Image (cartoon, rainbow, N blue to C red):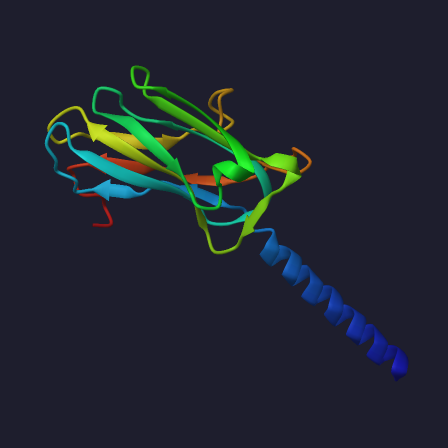
Length: 176
């Protein structure tokens, strides 16, 4: 009887530990908003927040966002509050002609951040170039180009992620 009880307890502990590990290992989704229905004039500024649904011991990240360059352009950016300049280094490259913006952040001294509630990586400020601008706001992944979006842990191991692209358009999306 004691042996059966011990086996049952061990089996329950294995199941619970597996559930905890599975819950913690959620793949983060990097997302930009759907701004369908944004009917604006030329020269209008708007902001988008690129968020991560979760992060686990992430020491560095880099995002590459592309857009339709004759429709909109990035004019400035600010990092989320979890990424202060006093704790790390930031690099960025904005090509308004080619229509891409790359920004990266790395903590000093092997520090990292974790969050299960989601957090802001970067807020982008945009400007429309035409009346009723229309552009996909695309998060570039590893399968597309060497200048990719990436997350890495304190051992510089790439961390998996998924993406949800944003859109800025006067047209209403299917969910609106």
